[in-house]
Image (tube, rainbow, N blue to C red; front, side, top):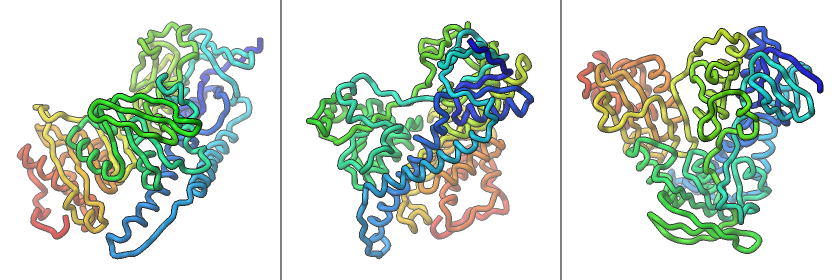
Length: 472
């Protein structure tokens, strides 16, 4: 058996794994990056980028259909084959960019094989070799979960890893799962003329913990497609080219679909990698305990990052976690906490949704909540997208912002401003003291900020006019 040695071995060449390898090498560690296929990151190949390409196509058709609102007569026709061809073409270009960056790694760093722990710092490879490292980073990512109830219709089931391979748009699509991924793809399909329905056994939409924003968001999206929450499902094959979905609970009915998109979650890809041989404490799901600031699993020379740790499954967090894990793996046993950013996630439906920081409940005595609606907001009315609700949470003692749940037009942009404010420790007064251009969507946040100031008896900026401005 061939024995390979290194300072840091990284399992998985996704966003977190690549960041971990760069970070470890930057800290003078000899690294080995092990991956089954080096096929590009989840974001580039089956996640962020292809989904946004499909969303962009849907938005283009939606703009045509809404043109009459502005007195513009327009007509459009969706070419499903062309839509999916562009999605794949541009997706492949993004993947090629990732692969080009991987190709720049030294050949003796990359190992194309499956890795399995044979001890805390020993990895058995599928090609028969064995890796002995001083420390290991687990960056194996996640994969779609398809519940057993769909076994009988597997040939009509799509996931985010297969939907982009369709040659043409289906005529109908049932989406199981009202989380961010399911909603993004469902709205895109609906806007492209696909008969689309969304189902979820839970009673929340988009994973939102603030039920006020959740209800507003549900109502807005339901204008474009049915979204049924709190329903139990039964599924049966419908000939060779379809599936029948029956539901009961908060509503009941039955519908035939060409395909089902199952978006019920992406659990960590840790099964079968031999964690039981490492001596780590594992929970009921086989997950190791780890420290979020250091990414270290217990006190072992094992670190975990990205979707594999099932914490914040977004790209910028995977990159940060990988960087921290790689640095600490290189310096083990000297391990230091890394600087984490404020929790921040965006859903790219229209309206956008953003969840930032800590979410306060209505009865939280230590918090105050400011609310603003976009239903009558000036710029939103100009653009005929005046719908949405934002809720900001702040410390009752001084009005310092601690979190936000936002559903509204262009929230993907304004939410960055609030995330930066929260991470910088700003109060509502300090945010209001910044320039707000008129007329913009960002002005729609001012009401929520002012109500926080009023509630905590904090001053509004003395040199800022609080009087009426047309269209704010």
